[in-house]
Each structure stands twice: as C-alpha cells, then as structure tokens.
Length: 427
Image (cartoon, rainbow, N blue to C red; front, side, top):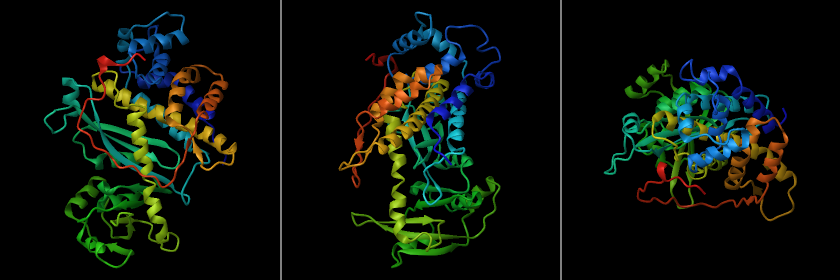
C-alpha cells in the first residue's frame, strides 16, 4: 500500500461538504438553507473551520473579504445561520477523514497493530442557565459550568478517531464503550489505570481488540498479591467476575467467560513499581522488555490533549448554548485531524531532506496551526492543489528538535476562568 497524501483525503472531504446529501443530513429543519443568503451552507461550514478564536466580527469580515463579493456579513447573520446546523455535521466530516485515511493507506503500526488510546478530561464552559442545565457544574464553591470530554486516539498516526462531550458527572466507561464501536481486530489499546475493569477486559476480547492497561492497587483479590511477588511477568486465569461486572456485560449482550491475563511489572526511575495487565500473553512473541516503552507510548494522547486545549483552544467557545458548544467542540477535533494529515506529508518531506544534525526534527505544531488558519479557506473552497503544497512548505519552517528522554512535571494551579466570550482578542 502507498502513503495516501493529504490532497486525496481533503478532496474527498470537499466533495462531502459540497454534496446535497450532506447539507440535508446536517440541517435542523427541511426548510433550512433553502433560501439564498450571504452565508449559504457550504460557506458556513468552511467559515466555522477557520478556527474562530478572535473577535467574531473581525473573523467574519476577513473571511467574507476572501471569498465573496459582499463587503461584510454581520455577527447576527452568522448566528442566525449556525443555529440551523447540527453539531453532528462535524462528526460526519471527521468520519469521512478517518475512513479515507485508513482505507488503502500505508499507516504507522506497532507489530501490525494500530496503537490506540482513550483519555478523558474536563472543559470549562461559558456560563448560562441552558449550559448548566445540560452539562452541570463542578463540585467546588465556584459552581463553574463544566463538561466531561473523551478522545479516542491513534498514537502512531496522530489521528482522533472519535470524540465525545457529555455532562460533567459522566463516568469514563460510557465514553469508552462508544469509542470502541470504532475498534476491532489488529488494534492494541493502551489505557491508564482509570480503565482497569474485568468486564472491560472481557468486552475487549470479545471485539478481538488487544490491550495493555495499567492497574490500580486493590484491583481484584486474585491480582493484588502480584505486587508483592518476586515474579515480574505472570500469566493467570481470571475465572470469575463480580456481580457488578456481570451486570455491565449483560448490558452489552455478553456473557462472562474465563480468560487469561498477563501481568507485568514495570520499574520506574523513582523506584516505584507499576503493574500492567495485558492480553498479549505469548511471552516469546511479546517479551518482557517491550512493555515499559510500549505503555509509555500512551503519553501521545496526553500531548494531544495539551495541543487541543492550549493551541487549538478547544475550550474557547463562540457561544453559550449547548448546540454551539458541541459545534465548536467537534469542529476543533476535525481541525486537529486536518492539521495532522498535512503535517504527516510535511514530516515525510522533512525527513527525506534531512541533513546530518545532532537531533531528529519534527514539524512545529503551534506554528503550523497558525499557517493553516490562513490557508484553510483556500484549501476548502478552491480547487487548486498548489494551496496544499504551499501550506506544506510553510509547515517546514522552523521545525523543532526531538529530545528523547525528557519529562515534565505536571503543575496544578488554582482555578481561573481562561476564556471570556465577550472579551475575545482582535489581534
């Protein structure tokens, strides 16, 4: 299989954006987008993919100046159009991108597996009664509107396969079940200890999905003693599960069956010991030495979440209603994936033209995101392949060195509202 370039994937996306079927599936009412407006359906979608992080009126004026004979479109006109749009339209576009990316493409794998991970986090939301009723608030004295989000991520290919946003008190497991509808055989799931559960292991095995999961202490009595044992790797059979786990499996239409589980000790630099549980029980095919590095590849989803929050600004919403919050959220995930597929092409070119240097280099994600915002209008609304080639050249500016073995200590700070809708920057 050949490497599928960004041009062919974006061509498929543009075809979907311009199709009548997509418009009909994306509108709230059959009457929506039937009259001629300054912001027709296709133009509206493309505008919302330009990463709206500055003053909305300024964003509109600059956008319209690029693509239309109209001198301006008001913020009110934009808001009247966007309420006709289902948030799921951006899920649709992301599915097109993901399916096109994985079809007949030479993707990065580990031992033939896609390396996947799931991570959940929280987002502060704009404060309104409607938002609080829909998503809830945090539990401290601030009573801040919050949502729980989750991403299903390909660690090797930098692709968000699926994203979810739900009320703040939503548990991690319902997210995982929805994500796993897009997983299957030849997938290897790497999860943190919040996902350790016998029923989830059983469910993954029923899908044919392999896994490596860090376990918490007091997981189940059959396993807890392993922390004190001299063994560093051990295969054991899980012969029973709790009533709670059986109830979870029944909801999924699955009956518990005993299964084998491999336990592996990982020794950290600070002297601590972590225990991993894995379905990779063949000790010859998957020797002990591979698991520490394999598990720590999960860090890729942490860096992706940081990119989403601090560079793409996924929590910088453009309105107060749950509908707009969902539009912005799913559009941000899709924007991230567009950046990833173009970055992938540029990275290949960077490596092919590499000079002998001390470090390997990678595309500067922050800088490339800024360049993409300026070019995305031309890429999505015009049919000139040179626009993508020009963007790739911009991505190659100022790559950053890859310094292996570095680690950062997480810093926790007191809460402070990060984004204000009525104080959005104009510069």
